[in-house]
Image 1: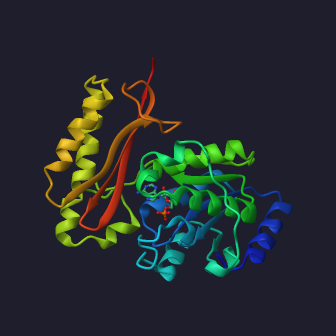
Image 2 (image 1 turned 120 degrees about the vertical axis):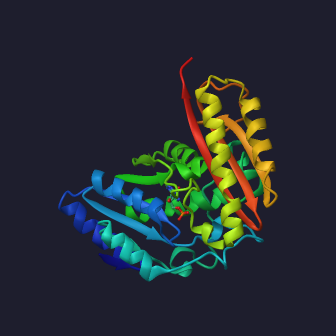
Length: 284
Ligand code: AMP
């Protein structure tokens, strides 16, 4: 596996692959990789000749009081995982390689879409995500890029950005990978104390509760959100940021379970903010 730290190294390698008419897949990550990330690499390997993963904790997507400094990092372990899963190149730049000191150009969706859900408490987050992903698209020029359904709003926003900016890149969404007990895998799970780790199960439990209500025929989105909210409130260590049912494409709130609906939540367990969600596809 090639370890690239400069944009130029990535460009040279991708150019060589493209001269051989090989297709290229991109898996953007912030490192501290787990099986959720590995599932994206596996999917990319199955669909592309060469897979590039980026491993970069992107400062522009963190707010002033967020966990940029504390975000867990273990590049050697990441490389071992990526290599084992057939990744051909990892791009691990310094912040200075990605952002000039006076960088002032951003990619931002100006509709209400990035202001919903996580955007309410993280107002600059999706501007940072769109900017870094856009830069990665320009650096790697992949044929396809792979994102997890775990970050459902991010996936919807990237799809919109790709459409609006005419990136000729296919976006592939991949299902949420969970721990055996249900907790969605996340690099941030490492922040949890043993007691908090147990309490964090309330997220997936309420996701499964919502899914069951849908399966049993409930079509009132507000009833589902209310039941999930009440369920989360039974856990003393949990503090709800949001639980919402939104249109799966626009991210705007819905009252009925009809068409593609995303039911998503962000919940603090102690100081750790965790997210989880499920998607419903229901015909008219
Ligand atoms: P991150 O490193 O947290 O920025 O995540 C990088 C990519 O991995 C994003 O597209 C995430 O949605 C995806 N991802 C993270 N956790 C999971 C998971 N548990 N299941 C599936 N995809 C995931």
